Image 1 (cartoon, rainbow, N blue to C red):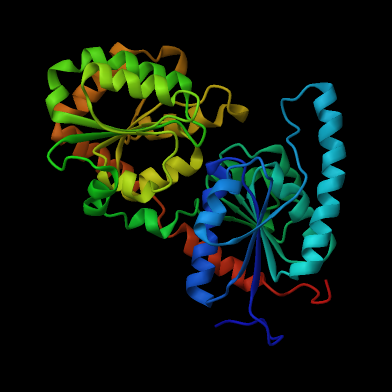
Image 2: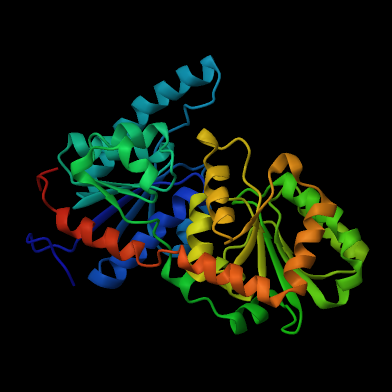
Length: 378
């Protein structure tokens, strides 16, 4: 058990979420703090409409909500409303800091992190922010000037932050992702161990363009239908449509609106079809999986395409732009990966060489070094 010299257990506050890309790095850090210090005083701060509302209770951590909304890409009215909610979220964050007295606040990204990290700075609590993308978002570009430590994933993003307190660490990956069991996954998802498994997901909300292309591809994969199966996270909106398509063509697999057991999903997959968010790529490269990446075309500063293009250039993944995606092209890539074990192995090796499975440990070391430096009378 670790305490901060005050006779009390270490208290950690992790702010952020909205999507899995911002939430899961925070969970990776929470799990490491719990493992290394034994603390149970870990509290997530998010919004009631973000993914954290569904995921964090399942993970067993505390969760508090603040009244925050996004600002980027909104209409004038929505921006005025967001500024109003920013004021409310700062008020909420001050209250939470007074109640939980954190030794450190970690901002994992997304608009839910801004107020809590800023309030932590104003209350002299040590703060650390995680930047997953090569082009930092507006919230982290501002917070980086005030945070005690900034942890970045890509060399390209270092220039956006103050040099003396910015570290190239990589993006933290949950330990369970690194240790997923194929045997457990086969039972969990009801899959056939002899079949080639294609795992498809489009982020926490699903991706309609990927879902549509996969459905279109089924007619071009009929010659290998008996030898492949699908594990597909569709999102709520497309679930019935996608499930019915698989059934109509007679394919085997598991179709779900949302998959919580990502470690098992990764472990059982032979190839992956997904978006190219930074957290997804951190996970894929840490475990070394062959993938077909379809970058989200409306990502801020086009960072998903930049992320995917790096892997493609290193022969660590295939990339198809969303505008070029169709069923015939997708089926051709699936068949190429299915028929050539040598190609899959080469991609897996190149992919793993880019992974940074020790990122969470690097960030943990920095976090512990600054935790508790602030005033204890917050």
